[in-house]
Length: 381
Image (cartoon, rainbow, N blue to C red; front, side, top):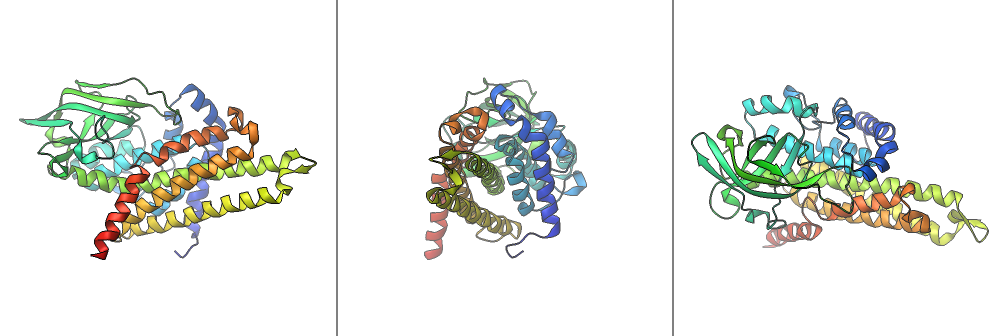
């Protein structure tokens, strides 16, 4: 692939874009207003293979690439970034089971995850461990054939409405080497959920705390050996960062399209807005930034697919750049609408609210800079 999509990739993108236009976009504002979690629509998307995009096909996955996933999540986000982002998180958690689970675990959970009959949440962040994820304190103590879990996870997407919690817990000493990954049934006794958080955006998916109070989880639910959980979590985030950047670009594309349509119809001082040279320059810059971010995203996704040694750094770069560009472009699109951009019915202010959190989750953009700089400094030694 040299800066062009092949026929299969175009078909995948167009399929997702058509689904977003028909099934997601017409309802996005209502879902946001009513805080509705559109599980039924997401299961329809799963029927197109979107529930397990890069899951192996022996368990019902689509066995596509990370590059394909970037195309899909950008396309879905043109309808609603929030809905696309949750499907991304579900795919990330499912991939962790596919990549690190044994055959029994894979065949137990993944067929229903790929159809989204079961939904999954990714549980890493805690009240006192966000950017410093290796400092997590949720404890899993071995008791025979079970672990007893105690602790709390924070800002968990889908929590309370999902079936499986892919949780990073401390089975050993301090630091990343003491972390393991365990798949927890959301209905396990001792697992409870906080209230649905009141958020600036992302209202079409619930966000709750997950509380473990002497929750007994079978040892057979652990992914891989004890002590590799932090590695699993970080591997999941490489792809998650690409996906969330893609969601930002999809939202930004819709914001730009809305701005262009508005400028064509709106007149000021006797001319259409799109006839003012200053505003023409503005939209040219916006489109250029969007295309640059998209090209970089494709480069990083291709690097992750081929297991490039620099893939993690490129994913961090793409996440930082893509989410910054996406939010800034949406904000400029709102400005081009003037006062109407501030009204919910035009749909731009929702995109601005939704994209703001993308600069924070999957690792803040400050942490992305840290990942990049560490890699560069190590390479210069």
